[in-house]
Amino acid sequence: MKTKYLGLIGLLLGLAVVLGGCATGLTASSWPGVTADANNAYIAGGPYVYAVNLQTGVEVWRFPAKAATTTPYYATPALTPDGQLIVGSFDHKLYSLNLQSGAQNWVFDQAKDRWIGGVLVTADTIYATNADYNLYALSFNGTLKWVAPFLADQAIWGSPVTDGTNVYFGTLGRHVYAVNAQTGKQAWVQTVDGAILGTPVLGPNNTLYVATYSGVLVSLNTRNGEILRQETTSSWIWSGPAQDGTNIYVGDANGMLYAFPMTGTGQAWSQQLSGAIIGTPLVVGTTIVVATESGNVYFMDNTGQNIQPFTVSGKIETSPVAAGSLILVAPTGGDNTLVALDQNGVAKWSYKAK
Image 1 (cartoon, rainbow, N blue to C red):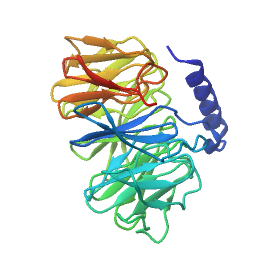
Image 2: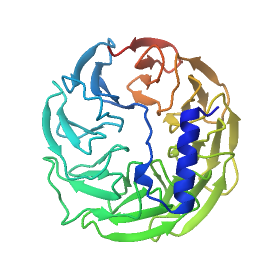
Image 3: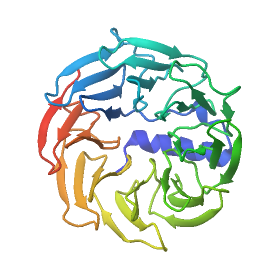
């Protein structure tokens, strides 16, 4: 069931899109962003970014030393190959943190709005989408790589993806963009039926999949933006889809989880779960992990069967994250900030920020 908070966001977002208003004035998602490396989980939630040891569940460090409640962190952190943690804040700044200590390496402060989606990191570039309508390309020292950022039509809340040639992302203005990864010039743009709040996913055969707030999963040709296929769901979709090479998985606000085959049309299967599905499903081998707003974590096979539910205190509105043999979930309004489960759904440890 949708909360009053999400319902209000949905109403405002719908009005903004229908009326063509400025989407950057909306209240963005307020649930934690989580990522992990071999040693730690990193949580961007509220006034801090936390590092938590994956073996013990003990806090290693937090940034900043003193909370700044007016500039919360919610964007999913990202790791760079040279050992930095990149995370954006609602204070319009993008921070690089030292993985060992949490100390600030550098800050990029040229954006004009909030960082809501996490950045995309490649071998040599940070691609960062901001609610100020811009896609920024940064070097690993925080300097701009393009002459100017790429300006889209409206706010960008999801992270970008790349196939090495182009960078792809969607906007609240119902557009999907392909931008040349080297030059920052537009390769193509396509209009879809609904605002895009989440991150697209790339599939085989030059295919890009995006999910829209109007409840449509759209497949596009990455070479020219042509719409190849559209599948509908029962309600709005907040986050992007996931894929395993066979199916595309996406959840909606009614708690319906869908598997659409990557070739052909129609559904492979669907499952009704308890609670709105806000985050992207997680694919771990042949296992699909889905978290719902009611605090349930579902483990199932890739046919939608053998469902094993696990319940945590609070709501889960962020995507589950794989960390070695662990599955990490970050509830809001519950007893813990982060819960680590094994792949059988058994709790291994929990962490509560203080």
